[in-house]
Image 1: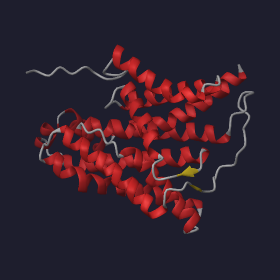
Image 2 (image 1 turned 45 degrees about the horizontal axis):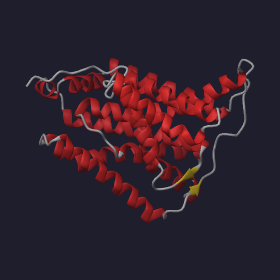
Image 3 (image 1 turned 30 degrees about the vertical axis):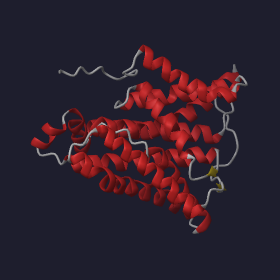
Length: 294
């Protein structure tokens, strides 16, 4: 039983990271109906920024983390303004936005490969590799910190969207962007702010993930971003609670698969869950079926 609980905690830790990234996918899709496949590479950018700040510039941890979060959020705004803003304002087809997102992803990967080369880099983890006693169980400190930080951020985001003026504007733009404009809401700024929040959450997820796996490379965000997208789809893309639930489900499923000695099948289990969900409930756990009149 102790081993099962430890694996469950490890799964929740991994799932919390997937959930943070999935939130970015869901928030952007909820407002502009865009699958931002460059979102996974934002994780990569945040990790290289952290590496540059700590290992190359020699900045202290308390400076490196805020700097990484701020720069990553700014990058999200820059990407939205340069790559998506004009396309969204002109009302282009979604396939054009999707192709643009793939292009942005390839651009980020190639740029960082050009700067840092293709070899993997390592940076010093800042959390000690030790366990803590918790109700007779001894999970790793990194897993517990990851879960706590992720839950706090998810709760803060939920409250922000529900209670603040900007959050209400985001919900209005999600429901009907045209009506939101008529009500005086600057939807362009709302979209940019959404990209900033999503990028910020991805940066936190990247720092937490590579605290446990401190090896970075230009293409490392691909699979992590793809699994987070799967989590968003399973939970119901566009739904914040769905992104949380989908991430936790995937994390626990992957950890349990590894714990029984089938680590080589962990990815197959993740995508198998996606296939089952698409067959049984295509809209996801918290998604809604939307009928379009023709």
